Length: 557
Image 1 (cartoon, one colour):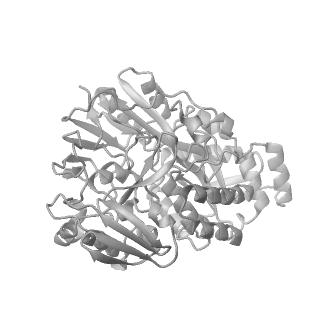
Image 2: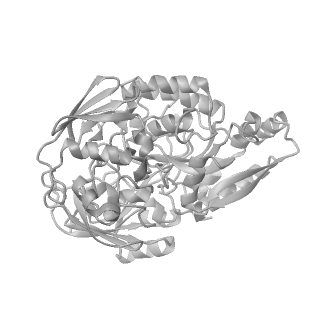
Image 3: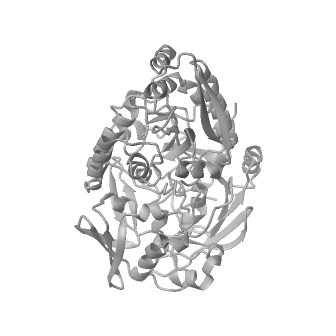
């Protein structure tokens, strides 16, 4: 089987074995409308000492060498058109290739060489928790939107209120639901007033919902703002052929001195993976992410001296979400039987070794990795015994919702074959990729297969919105008072590292009770021509503050 449509560093296992807090990122929020998180990137092997799968052979992660040169353009590839350029309306993970270069957010995360994480300012110069429900931020002066208007605290207030306004019909309201209102002290100082104590809110403050558009441009263009995105980022949208291509040019007044190095970059939409591989080889495009290529093609590019291949970090986990509050998902013995019947090594082989075995929801090689949590076990005899305990020794039929994406379809077929060995017959409910998000949000599924992010923002989002009984996306998935209590304790913990250890407790409950079934871990993979410098994955020390930022890319020739 071939894969496609999903998006080692030598020191990574050492970093991941340390119990240190790390990295923050972007979204689900990346899920958003539960976002098309299914557009993620496959990659990376687990650390065997930590109980992960075998580490695949991969190209060294490219790092910046030499002195950056200004000038030039490159062409990046995306597999699908963007959902929107509007910060209040974005819903697809692929949007970040363009979106994260147009806008800025108040804060970013900072990964240190030892793997530890701190939060650092971006548009915000400083911040202070006045008390658990009041977060005061002071913003930088002298920054302008690309329409020439000044960036001020009023713009942040405008963005928050616009996103929370029901008339906007924003896909990003979940990230901001802790906010009761915001108060301005002066032109550059603002306080988020929260409806309840929530220290997690700060780590979500660089997610999509917190990206700041120009109020002037929003008011000028109205509903057509989606075609005139205006932010404070390193690039500006110059031209687009919707669904086919986008052209971005350098913001000459970007507030970060000396950046970006490129004069601009283009984005070509190429849905077909065979065509995508050919376009990369022929020079039609210069840079692409995992989702655009089959694993076999990535392995081929790893052996081609004209290209660099980066395989790094933990982007997410492809897993089966389960509606556990109703039959048949409410039968714990059926859930245990299913996870025991999944032979994940066959999935690793299917993806040419470019994925890894991992527990969930905090996967190997992620910032919140718990090295003491064992990987899910494969044992057919135990699985059959659980089916007997479930009262289903004669078999059962389940509905498994799976995206029509070819990769997910072939994953679903492999799961069908494996589960059939214990008498579980899967009826595949094939859903368009964007429909998977709708199913997740509405709860209209019994078992649902999809990817979900593994970065710190994604982890915080999972705990807040999926595992807590009152989460926005907890639609019949979980009702556990003990789990709720631990998550609520995390809301009151300002230290990310200590919060991570609370999440380890949640993880143990989830894995012991089979609250979901992890299939494989996925991570960031990028393939680029050898003259592209400055690329560092978001999961690595020295990486960009947000996923897929091009402001530090430069061309060596």
